[in-house]
Length: 142
Image 1 (cartoon, rainbow, N blue to C red):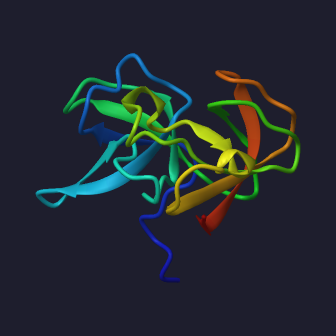
Image 2: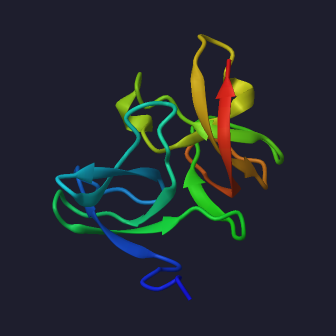
């Protein structure tokens, strides 16, 4: 069997920015001198493949949960949406406070670009709510 030294469920990863006051946002894995670290997305098409469970200060260990289509997660929403809406990363490039949040693809009416598809809403939601989503992966181009 070649599947040794693998992990399932929550893992501890070094925070590469101050995540200590955050939870329930998506984070992205990066390489920092050969070590795995996480930060909030720097671009709208970053591979946000973890949800932050417990934040940490820079250099500390944050608890993250890998996104998996087999189970749902709750993530902070930017704006409102409906069940079945495709969810993409919120625009953290324009508004830094929105890094790691999700928004409905239906709200992408202004500007063009490529956005990371991260899930499908399984309930109606409003701004700042922890929306239950089923993780999925892909991109959306507007």
